[in-house]
Image 1: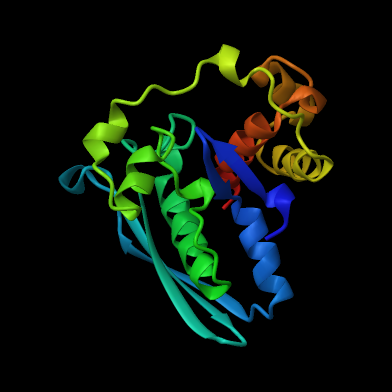
Image 2: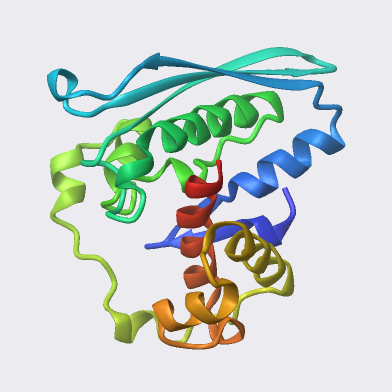
Length: 195
């Protein structure tokens, strides 16, 4: 997996969905099919569940993804079906191309730490007590890569009404000044809307 598709959050590495998709195409991706298994509703806690089936030259791989207002950020909450689908596709793609690192888009609103802890067999309650890094700790991050900015600009054009100017007003700074982590976070948010 190319480095520009990897991000670090709270000392752990994650892969971006865009990187999984690109790598799968390079390795002979034939198709991705999705199916909504559970429609979100009051009776099920507004949880959407989707299944994805990825076909490559090496075979067929499947993944399940879920999303609810409780495990996505506020901006994505109205789009839980699409986020569940994106998460399912990310899981199936990870299996298809043999990537063991969790996709950034699979993370919940809590930064995904509970999901990562469960997948690693750790005690979730102990991990929840850990403090997230402060803004002061993350100020020294590297600037966003050109590839991140290009992808983000494309997503903004597709998803944000009034484009880049409106997006820059939302984030409070020019898109070119985003850090890698900020760019990755916005890519995750906007790709859920565009999915």
